[in-house]
Image (cartoon, rainbow, N blue to C red; front, side, top):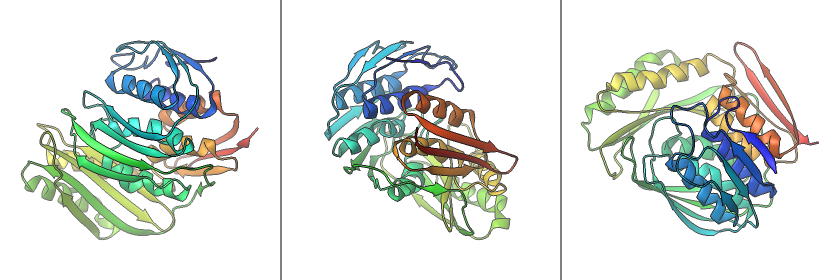
Amino acid sequence: MIEIDGGIGEGGGQMLRSSLTLSALTGKPFRMVRIRANRPKPGLAAQHLEALLAMARICDAEVEGATLGSSEIVFRPKSLKGGEFEFEIKTAGSSLLLLQTVYLPLAFAGGGRVSIIGGTHTKWSPSYDYIRLVFSHFLEKVGLPLSLSLERAGYYPKGGGRITAEVPAVRSLSPLKLEKRGEMKRLFVFITLTSLPWHIAEREISTIQNRLKGFGKIEAEVVAPPATSPGNAVLLLCEFEDTVAGFAAVGEKGRAAEEVADEVAEEALSFLRSDGAVDARCADQLLLPFATVEAECSLSTNRLSEHIKTNIYTISRFIEKKVEMFENENFSLVRLHERL
């Protein structure tokens, strides 16, 4: 039984999600205490509970402590199974974070189809657009192409969106080295806007174009998917010779369009002034697939966030890998070597 203190490091929900994924993949049971200890409301929230129950279905696990607010759980996986699954988060909790919990076990279990109801464009989590345009780009490179569709958007704070993912069967993933990004090829603003005035999107595009005018022409596209409530989300996609990077923010009632766009632009500028190959959010998300690869994988980013460091700690509890981390002002590097 692997013992994990959920209050170590960043101390958020990713520790639980990564532990569930790795437990299912390795067959190793774990106990986690002090779940989400560093959050304003510690313990299992609705999205974390649904991730726990979803993974239990996929690997026929025995679970203790599966209740809202629980600060301690025990998870004992049995056998993985693919197939069709439907999950529902009854809040605006992120459906994409739930997807990122289950897609690897499903792929190694023979593949499957997953439908998830919940938030699709929410605070503190990757948007549907980010997963489709950025994260999925790299999954395809390691040999796991996800097919994603958005039936309806679920904006913060209402949720209620619905996504579907077709997960292919895999036996192994390919190693990937993402240490250099190459020359800039394209800047692209992708805005999701439902049941709100069109000038919001125009102001967001204009703000980003002004903030990044020294980096070249910026293309833009606005889509208006069906949704359970009005909403707005912004994604700036940076395409390079060898990689892509994305920076996203979600609109809120009472928050100016310019402020939303400024948040995106500020993150993008911080990255563009560095020598990193992938943005920090994607670097964090790639650690789990990298951990399953026998050969060396590596990536560089503009900063090693506490989220990344905590995720590496969690991975090390399940899989023996030699991990190298290096960082300076303009460049941070993570290398995961073959299993020890």
